[in-house]
Image 1 (cartoon, rainbow, N blue to C red):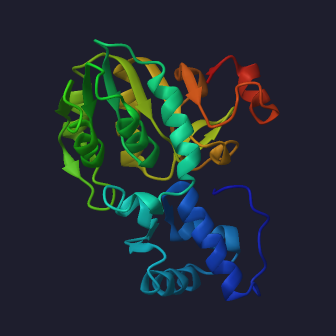
Image 2 (image 1 turned 45 degrees about the vertical axis):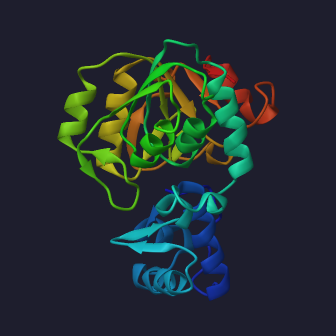
Length: 260
């Protein structure tokens, strides 16, 4: 379910388990205990105890059924705790290059989306819809950007709106560019997540966008999880920190998706 680790045996050392958990949480921002137990080939109870220990050590945040990264929880105040920040900054710079004055855009949420909001020049005039409170805060610092928050039920860990109200509001708009991140992306399986509600909202973002744009670090490529957000072909452009001609992106290039 998670990134393609070789399964560990049941005798794996606690220190090694902790490192795998931290790696997965850093990469995907949020993980389920059940997924991690499958990767490690240990019981859910063992993973739960590990997560409780890591939470006490302030290395992640324990949430019901899983764990989230500190960079994801505190993304509006602890900028330096964001995983692979330099790569996400490169992605954000490329994404900003798509924009022109007068565009109407939609930014979903997550750490890479927050970097995009930070990187938009103050002199640029845009209308920006968003479901993310941290993204909205960053956009409000830009004097020429009209910020429209799409409300709904706010997840406390991510501060992103979701639920039926958010999906309904998204159904009534059509933007020039819609920017989304993903937990997992694969050429054959498309964009996937472990959270069904998150998938529903991201599907609505894709439908509301004339040009849906996936922004993701390359470490998430060739991974998949339970629920499909959309096919890769439903996304017009994929932006990573890599150059489009990088061999790592070859199978994505072959699929016909525009790479930046």
